[in-house]
Image 1 (spheres, rainbow, N blue to C red):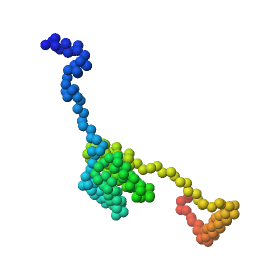
Image 2: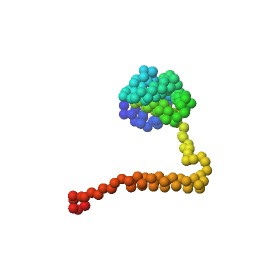
Image 3: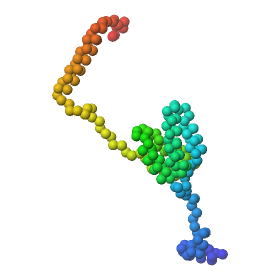
Image 4: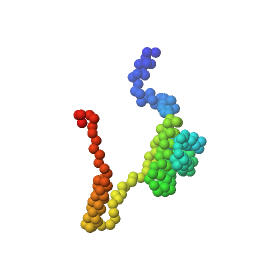
Length: 186
């Protein structure tokens, strides 16, 4: 028995692996789910909507209902790159306000985050990248669209001076009171 043990020790690993049949040699990792297999049910979505709508005002409930309906219409329960991109495009086309975009897309991101936590499936979070909103270019608004002349500036200062003198006249019409302090150190 000692000889066979020593023989196995001396034999290189590669030759030992050749003698082992492939099914024995294969490493069986935990099966990874494909991205296209991620899904959710309408009842899960409705449950999340009910959870989020607790103690909210009517307008907030309306936005949650709109966002959940858009999510279901675009995905029908399937979470994939295609369905998330479709949802993003729908929201950008349907609403013109950036606030509306944030509400609708934010709901979908929060729902995916909730699914990843409740199911212990972190792949749901990986689809939030397809829901990112486009970056906004800040437009600098000018105070006025017309050319400001010297006369306009002079007129503005005159109006400021007139308003200031009016306030001072009003303040001077109030009676002044003198008070005495009972504390000697004041």
